[in-house]
Amino acid sequence: EIPYEEYSMYAVIMAGGKGTRFWPLSREKRPKHLLNITGEKSIIQYTVDRMTPLIKKDNILIVTGASHCDEIRDQLPELPLENILIEPVGRNTAPCIGLAAIRIRKRDPDAVMVVLPSDHLITDTERFLDSLTVARDMAKRESCLVTIGITPRWAETGYGYMERGEAADTIRKTNVYAVRSFREKPDRSTAETLFSDGGFFWNSGMFIWKASTILDKIRQLIPDLYEGLLKIEDSIGTQHESDVLSEVYQDIKPISIDYGVMEKVPDVYMVEGDFGWNDIGSWDALWDVLDKDNHGNAMRGNIITFNTSNSLVYSPHKMVALIGVEDLIVVETKDSLLICRRGDSQDVKKVVEYLEEKGLKEYL
Image (cartoon, rainbow, N blue to C red; front, side, top):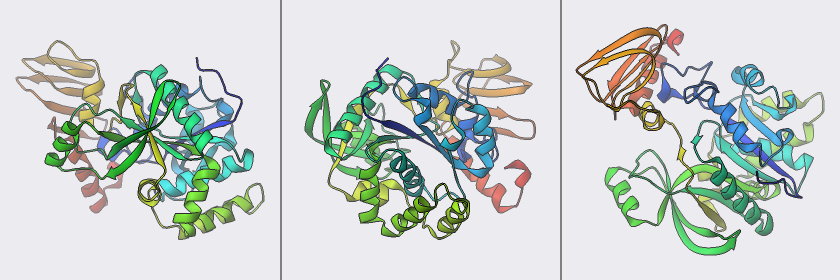
């Protein structure tokens, strides 16, 4: 275990996503991060467990929506109730991070905060915590913004990229690099170029900085958001807190922390991450990480296969038999059935968009 350091450190876990690419298992009321699709626990439970050798549970905050609040409290009873922060409406990552940062600033103005998505898989926790510790030390000492760049394993079009610059420092025998540029999710040919270049890393969506540092950047770059955050901060602990929160969020413009801050400031640094990271953003990504039989089939449930290979079958309720097929994804729930080719599961969100368009809310 990495020991607690002498200064304060918090984790902020963003748990506001819908997980539309995991339909039909992931639904509005029970999205991906609340499901136990990678093991015995839910993804968000694993995310919290992963942090506890480094950060006390009293210092772990979850930011979520009202519709998921009760389920998160049930799944994470070890966290203090006041650490579950509820956004009245989703406004992307910059307001979410700002809301947590003002809470942390109220508790400890000099604290470092680690911002994490709720729905990522990491297989090597020790190396992950080592990377966070290096990033934390950099963020503390230099009052700068630090992120984790994932060493790419293939030419991925579903992730943003960051370009590694010069080594800026060495902490705990690990290099910390300047980030030269950020790149949006690329098309196939661009992804191939970035991958073969060797100097580009996947953007993990994990950030490390002092609460005071990120709030100062928001003040400079997204002043309207900062003004709203100050109103919320002033109301914390008063009887008007929930009303002020709702009023402010009605006027907040959705903006990501990447677009609003990270791509616009010169002092962003990166620690290389190589710890078995996967954002499990689709059924294809889940097939990549699940255990498979000798024919490349990943199966959950009562499944029979003959002459079937490289397929994912998820059917906890019905017995499913596959004969003479390959590269399929089959997902069964009580009211829906998904069948698609492996490689096409990013398009599952189109099904969700269709259901929304047709008003078929019972399947959402």
